[in-house]
Length: 275
Image (cartoon, rainbow, N blue to C red):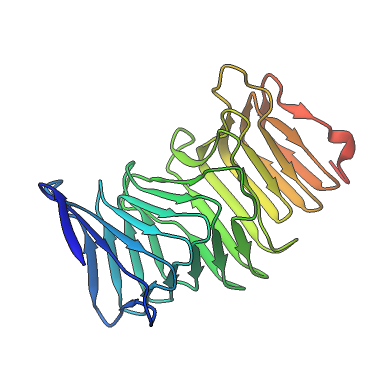
């Protein structure tokens, strides 16, 4: 059902009942939430036992100011050959899940966000999730103190790339923590962007980490407790700046090239396996 909550703003929600509600977009089918001229805004909520599946040839567009919300028990599946054009918000709440099997996932424009709030993002083994854009990049955001948002399979990669080091590409602030749940599997690649770890934001990773031309920063008044912590893995930083963010190597091999460590930048390298 869909209802107009205020002029030009529509909310659509799937309801759970005797059978799950499954929305399947494929074979040149299109689902569009809101309008690209800022005259209409929408919200599609996928609730418990319901799913939105983008299969080969399917296209989903979330326009600026509109939302796709995956609630507890809800599921978003993106398969090879599909296009997910995110210009607004995709919000995955605690207990919600994303299964990424392939396809083109766009974070188009500065208003575009993928918000992971204590949920599960699964990337199939051997698959690379490389967020793309048509000129201006949005960002991925971790919220809440829950852990294990990322579940990368063997040989899978999550790549977040901006156009310059000033582009905001990743946010994990206010006690948020970006953890992966599959111990030792996968690879997080950050390129050409800013990572905001303000107010006790954390990157605790036991998967491989590579960052190139990135700024890691803590802008909070009481900066000093935000950290990057690779655990039992390999971390490679090239041409990066750590601004009031502490790098702690925990039994990891660390390769640092042409990086700037500002105030509070380096900590506990004695725990590194190799540096």
